[in-house]
Image (cartoon, rainbow over all chains, first blue to last red):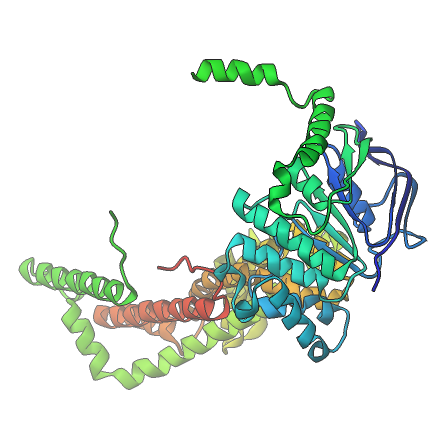
Length: 268
Length: 256
């Protein structure tokens, strides 16, 4: 199945209450079929909110948000979602966790056994299908969660800081694997993160959000060969992208090197 | 460094302390020449139990039956009510205050009413055992049903399954540890309820044995019945702790 198209025109999200909070302010973005989009921003930039709106978990306040030409109201079809904490069910084996979407869709589980085995192989969990989540490490659990998101062959994969809770080494490994999975499935991916290197490494385009209210600060096309290796992060081209983004964060007042220097002086 | 204590070791240590307690008790009763009518020695109680074990077994089975009936009703109705309370805000706002209000009525105080309503058979005992234990199930089941992580709730919505599927495949299993914790409290309370029921009006059960033995100052018999009740409580709790380990193997049990 080819990837979904997402069309966002001037999307705003305001949380009501006594002091209304604008989470998203005029987000306009076209996501092409099969494109890998990273949404990068500091906490409070509404990047997760935007993802939840695409997932149909939250309603937008104004503007237009469409998936494959259909205005999104409630979760669209053919969506897989990966959460920051894997959201695996403790009482189900990895295999049965992965089959959950099939069971919910009332599809015959037996017909998806081979797909499941292929997915487990793809993420290197072939020997762990009958284990329980608690028996797996954080990285392995998140791989299983990715399998669960992919089992029903979604055209759109939404990932909400999926590797945020992992240690740096595992996170690098997961980035490489996610790229490999995506190159094999070629669905549309929207990947939310606050890691600059991670966002650049994975994406076709990086969408940078500003903090409170969330606006698009810049959209950066990443023109690096695929499959990318981790070493690409040491190249000048890669550095050009990350420096540009860092400069954006600097303008937003998110990075203040002087304070860092003061801290260093105090520490030394 | 703290040494890890294994299950069998814990059993041995527990048995030693119980045995030690009985030895000290026996020793003081004999040394201080305490009359059996005040405090019989453990040997007399054990003797009493062994010499009339058919009599005790008969009454123990009756008490066990009413306890379990009350307990099972409390679990079924408690989980059902909790599901409805969690499922509907309106139902919660109308019914939950009533449940809290009813729970604050001392159940022991209204036990005689059940004799008026349900007679002197096992029904009033079951009713009291149920009433006294159901609240623990409701509270813990509600807590469990509510404690589904927000990620998992979102997952359920994205997957667009039926409400039934989400309840039986996600919500109920994730509430199971809490429900079992509530059941462990409820089983002890149900036993209390059954005995209170037998105190009020009964010709059967260990509560009746205690009350009638007290009337004839047969203290060893009171102690014998109390001993059986203690072991019964221990056994019921242990059975549930075992069921907890069996049904929720992904949880490390808090009953070590």
